[in-house]
Length: 151
Image (cartoon, rainbow, N blue to C red; front, side, top):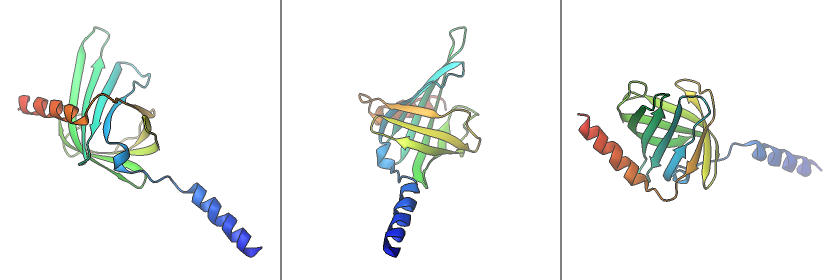
């Protein structure tokens, strides 16, 4: 009886453990979906096998003006969080050296969801959908060309 109780406790504790996520699950290109808080925006994000995270973000105002921001990061997954360290950015809102910490809520083959917990608390979940026909290296090449052109 004692061993059954111990086994039940071990099973209960293991079922409560956080899932273990791996960086390889993110490799590919994703679209960060609009969260319903205007102005309208979306981002395309390339995660490479060697730990680069390249972001192209588009925001549309009510007059039809489009603002494009782009940045290059290094990323890793640690203790159930996606940690992104900014190496280059064209916006003061995400400056070089900035570290973003997102709690990973789920990763599936074609969808993942995070919630920003640092340096600021997010206001909505960030839902990403896989873009199967876009190579993450293409996103990184665009960001790199923008970086070179901006200097």
